[in-house]
Image 1 (cartoon, rainbow, N blue to C red):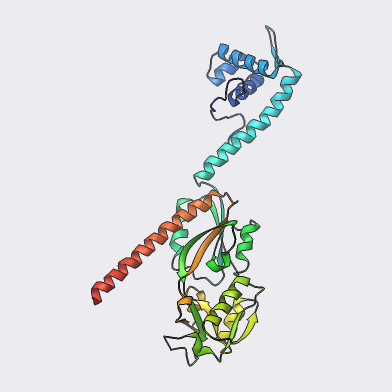
Image 2 (cartoon, one colour):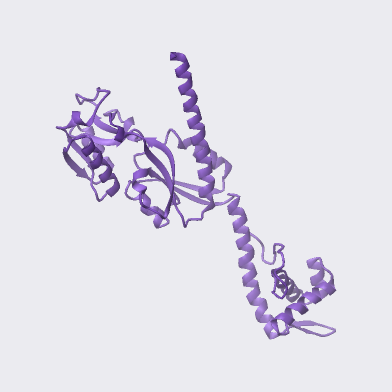
Length: 331
C-alpha cells in the first residue's frame, strides 16, 4: 500500500491548467503551514514553491492562504480544497499503485472453470504449476462446471476464464475465444458390450442401441451437436435424456445404454466403460477452447493465456518430433 501523502512524480499539463504537482505542493504547504519547511520536504526552492502556489491562487481566482510575518493559515476556501484534494490524491496514488502491481502480475485473483468431464492431465498441470511458481501472489481458483453453465459464469463475472468445447461458444460476440486443443467424438460403451473391442466402430453399427445424452435444458449446444452427429451418421436411435453427465456414465456403466462423448473426457479412465472413436469425418477436429469476457480486464488472464499458449506450442513441437521419429523408424 502507498502511504498517505506519498505521491508519484507527474508531468505537468498545458499552461493555464492546474497540475497534479501543484496540488501536491498545495497539500504539503497546508500540512506544514510553512513555505520554508514545505520547500525542504519537496526538494524545491522556496521562491519556486511560492510562485506555484501563487499561480494556483490566480488560476482559481481565490486566496488559499493568509500570510503574515509570524504564521501561515489556510483560508476557508483553502481548508475546503485541502480536504477535497486529499481524497482525490489518495484515490489517484492508490490507482497508480494497483495498476503497476497488477500489470506485473504480483497480486490479484484468477478464477478458471473447467468442463466437468474434461481430462486436464495432458496440458494443464505443467502450465498451472509454472503459473503458480511465477506469480505466487495471484490467488488461483480452479473449479469444474457442467457444459451449459460455463459461458454464463463469464457473463455474471463469477469466472475469469473457462475451458470448454468450442461449439458451446458459437455466436457469443462478447467472448474472446482461443482454441487450445482438438477433440474427436467417441462412442462410450459398457466394457462388456459385444462391440467394445471393435476398433473401426461407426454409428451405423449402433443403430439398434439405446443412447443416453444430456437433455437440451442442460446444454442446448451440446444437445444440437450430438443430434446432428447422429443424423449425419444415418441413425435415429431411441435416446434417453438425463440431467447430469454422472447420470450418462451411470447408464452406460450399468450396461443399459451407450453414449457419445469425446476422447478428451475423464470417463476414459473408468475401467467399466470403453471409448471408441467414431469413424466419420464430422466427428474429428473439433475445438477445445479457453474463453473470457471482453469486458473483463483482469491482467492475470493475459498472463495465464500467454503461459498456456507457450505450453501448447511446446506440446505441438513434441508431437511433431515424435511423428518424424516414427516416420524414420518405419520409413
